[in-house]
Length: 519
Image (cartoon, helix red, strand yellow):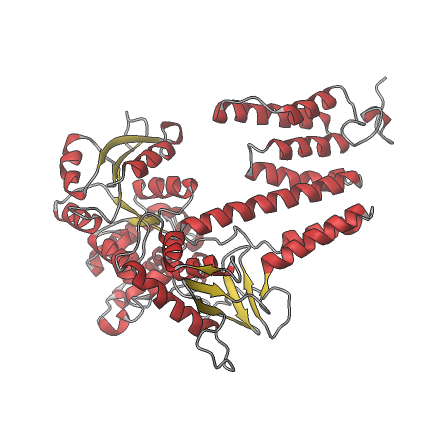
């Protein structure tokens, strides 16, 4: 961004008006963006760039006349040009690899959140590379054999400090993160990067990332935070995720976080993200036959793969091979071919979502019996099953719907737990949990009302009133609505110190034992 301009100037390139309209709604001036122009095909990009100043090109890959790869390649050949952020549904590893080699500074899946898109555009505009975490390791792992194809790596010619920077760049760290990890200045980082690019004959930062993976300098699947430790600790300890509870011998699935599966103590490799999305579409509909067309729609939506429906049986074959135990004689394993499609045989398979509902049922029974402490414990056990965002990183309309459903389930369960804790008088310990929840869901009026009740019960009336003011401001500014009846009623009760209405102390705060009465 240059002086005199109100934000990052973006050129949108996509052949679907609906997609461009959605991008316009996300990349708003209030978040630091200006839509400088739009193109419906890669052939229109040179003319658009000649007509306006652009900081970032957000480029679709699949377009009718000139696709995103060719358009990016032409921009690179033209000389000085703004960086390109590829925005794609991504089906083919080589397709995305071609985009990086053509000169794209980064890529992002169309299934990503609005927040990720905003961060990606800002990062690319600042000169950093952006690689979608959902597929980075798998995409670049296809190049791990490149060390054999390119035995003449020149990375050993770099000075030790430059090798450290190259390794960190390969991990996707920004200049500031590299400077912090290596205890050097950002100016030093930029200087070393310039020497790396010159010595290795690379055009930009994205090319340096690919080079690092091509030549085995960075191992796919390793955490970005390992960059600074890799030289001193050649074999950092991997992050070990414990299998979920359940019979050790059975096949187990976890979807309340990244999709994972275990057979015994062994975690299984479920393959590429779209293959995992197809598995999720079957696993979350156990014993239901899903047609091949439904699976295509579930995973690819309005942009089917170039191979059409042929990819579905290929993915099913790979999943069967992965999920089948050594003792199984059937070729189907737990994915059975039926009339009109495929069916996931859920009998005898442990799933965290099933256990989640069992714990919720236990919590309800305990509440009905008046055993509130046991109900809180069951809710806590259910919430512990969540290991981050449900189905994190997986693409497709079906997964998006399930992710939303499970996220709402988590919020509702968190609310129930908080309500039970307040009924037990655990106001102080509930405040922190609710504060974190309301920060993550700033427009949720039920959560705001609960936080106000918890703060009031903890003797923090002023803060409770501040929660109402902040929530109301966000609702008015962001959504153009006033608070609903429940939140207004809670606000009035706090104003009037009506502790009985709030489920707290009858007679208000002044009736609370130990609360200082006014003179």
